[in-house]
Length: 182
Image 1 (spheres, one colour):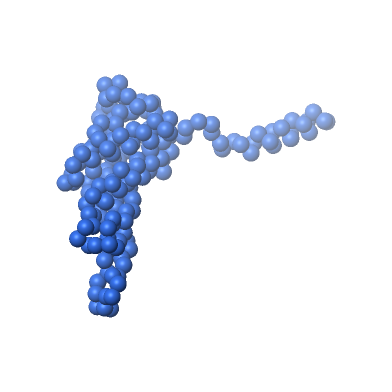
Image 2 (tube, helix red, strand yellow):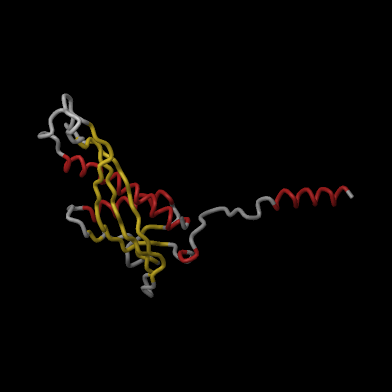
């Protein structure tokens, strides 16, 4: 009788963990993929040198995640084909200058930067698409010198410094989607 009670308690303890899985839980379409290649992205924007920056951010995130081994296109099970669709700079915060009238416009002091990417994963041997989705990486930046003198503010320089952060944010989303399906 004691043995049955012990076995019942043991069975009850282990049945609570029946839905858990140790290790990576890949999406169904990516279940057979072990190695992945990430070539440079295609750049549809006018911003130079984004292709390698975005690809390197994605490679770093995939290596940190560890679900897939990063390799060359020749040895990969799947290839990530990505394109940088657009960069959007949206005003986030504005300030009014001292001694201004109510009719004066607000000067933008902070922007939100959106980096929009299209990512498609294809099986290397068959060319069959395994996954395709748009991602958006965000970053915000303040305009340097905006409070001092509008003529010395350099919004383009400040934007270029925020692009790597937006690429990193997008890479985190892509890695999460490829390794966990969401």
